[in-house]
Length: 100
Image (cartoon, rainbow, N blue to C red):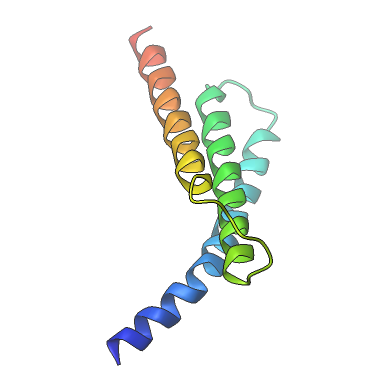
């Protein structure tokens, strides 16, 4: 019973992850279109880029699960490395901004 539930949740997780991230991306687009530019928006751009990489990763996962494409074992670690690098750079930018 538990094994079947875990399989079902694991098979639909990329779909609802993609839907939730698309909602977040729409919120980011609204943030970027705001006329008030007094906020420091550069780290948010890197977070947006990391979310775009995550969307690509989820699309590759869905296509791989549907046997439309066969993703190499190297693709997902590379995408995760890009996401983590963008997060770290975003945090370093924010830390540098707070020091000033």
